[in-house]
Length: 271
Ligand code: SF4
Image (cartoon, rainbow, N blue to C red; front, top):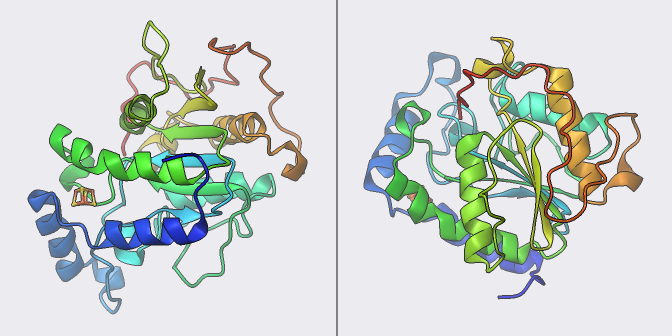
């Protein structure tokens, strides 16, 4: 499949993702969470199914997380949506909104009116895993969806991977797409960026509460990485706020990352 997909192809992929039941453990868990609910959302009908990608079919920047949150995307049915005011979705949306790529600085529900420009949100895993810890075979099961999505997003130039697991899944997806991965193999690090085939792959700590509220990741540092990835994707024309300078690394090399404030050697991505 070439890099010339259409919105209708993405829609067909979306339908296949939403009906997937390939991982028994995850099917049980996502449905159990949807039945039990969190008290604050007791009146809501949870999505409780795999969560498809969301965003602009003509995206130049793809943002990949780990998986839906139990009471976030697994509840709302939209990537990075419903995590709450200080949750990952709102932190991401504030960063995208600040550079003109999201219509709202938050993501609350599927009908909140949020639209993205030049950006598509996806994940390594489409079903919430217990404890945010997927099994290797579950990530393998879900990888073809990421591969197919990237192939359909024919204008994508940069992939921003949020967290170590998402970074690894993106590397595998690019390999499966036939793009040679540099040796030594790219290492995860906040702000690290690598040229792989026609893409820039950029790594960031996940903007989960676990990271932002413990000081592992500051909002400023996250915004800088998001803005840098957007520039690498060629979204400069859309960006209205001043932010990190554009990277000028030659292909295949990782230039100095933007600010590493918030980095901790003990960091473990929450999702
Ligand atoms: S994680 Fe992916 S492969 Fe597994 S059941 Fe969910 S959608 Fe299917």
